[in-house]
Length: 96
Image 1 (cartoon, rainbow, N blue to C red):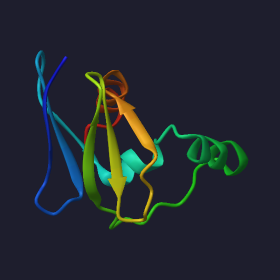
Image 2: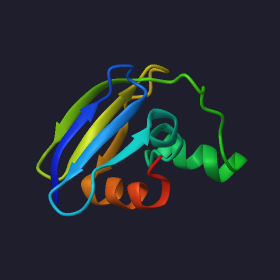
Image 3: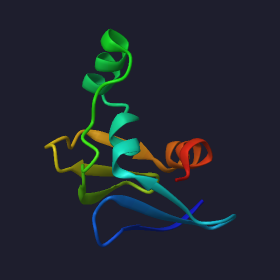
Image 4: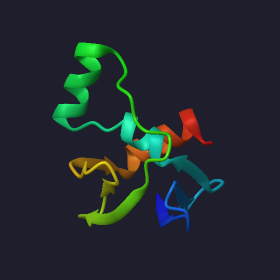
């Protein structure tokens, strides 16, 4: 499914190279807004969308097993686990 992940030099985007299909890119802002950890889901449930700084950056990627990645952000959020299937879904919706 996934060949490689790379954060851009400015730390603002995640480049995703898929084994099949075209590469895609997701902004740090989109990834942070679409996080599926309990606190982020609750914030969306309570308030609709929640504000994420336009200049948010990806500060670390941490492989989680063979099927996902934990993404750390400059706002201190580090609880979002993104299964590769979910990254594909986000790429299909937001490739920007």
